[in-house]
Length: 308
Image (tube, rainbow, N blue to C red):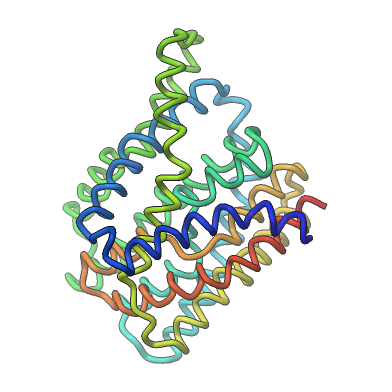
C-alpha cells in the first residue's frame, strides 16, 4: 500500500504546487483560467484523440461495463438526492449535490494518473466513464435545474444540451479519434509525434491547473461538503464495485479501472455548472476542496486494493 501511495504522491504534489502558486497569487485566477483552457481544448484533447485513434471502438465498448458504472453511479445519485430532499432543499440544489456525489475528476486527474499507474489499457474504460458522465449525468443536471425553474422541459433545453455536447472537446476528440480508428487510417509519424508532445502537456498542466483553481475555493458548509465528499470517495466506488463485481460480472481489469476512477474527488466542472446557474457554488467549492484533500489517502487505498 505504501508503494501505491508513493506512486500517487507525485500527482498530488503537482496539485500542491499549483495550489501554492494560486494561493500566493504567483498564478492569478486569469492565468489559471487560460491554463485550464489550454489543457481542456488542446493538451487533453490531443491525448484523447491519440489514444482513441489507436483503439478499436468494437474492442472498447463493453455493455456490461457501461451498465455497471451507470447503475452503480445512479444508486449513489439517488441516495444523495434522497438525503437532500429530506433536508427540504430545492430541486436545483438537490441536483447539484447529487452531481457532486457521482461526478469525479476523471478527465483532468483520472486519465493521466490511471493511464500511468494502471497502464494505457485503462484509457478505453476511462473514455466510457467520461461518456456516461458527460452525456447522461451532465445532461440530467441541466434538465433538472432548468426544468424546475421553468416548470417544464422545453425543446430549448434539449438544444442547449446538444450544443454543449458538440462543443465539448473531450467528446469531440473521442468521437474523431474513434472515427479515425474505424476507417483504419494510419497516423502519420509527424502527426503522431505532434499529438504525443501536445498530449504530454496534459498531465502536468491538468494537475497544476487543479491545484491553482483550488486556491480560489472556500471551505464553507463543512457538514454538507463532508457528506458529499463521503458519497464521492467512499459510497461511489463501493456501489460501482458491487455493480461491477457482483451484478454485471465485468472483466476484472476493467472493473479495477472503473472502481479507481469512481474513487476520484469531485470534478471541477460541477462548480462551473453551479456557478453558471447560481446554485450553491460555495457548497460545491467546499466539496471539491475537501474531497481533493482527503483523496490523497483514499485514492491510494482504492488503487492499492484494485491493483492487488
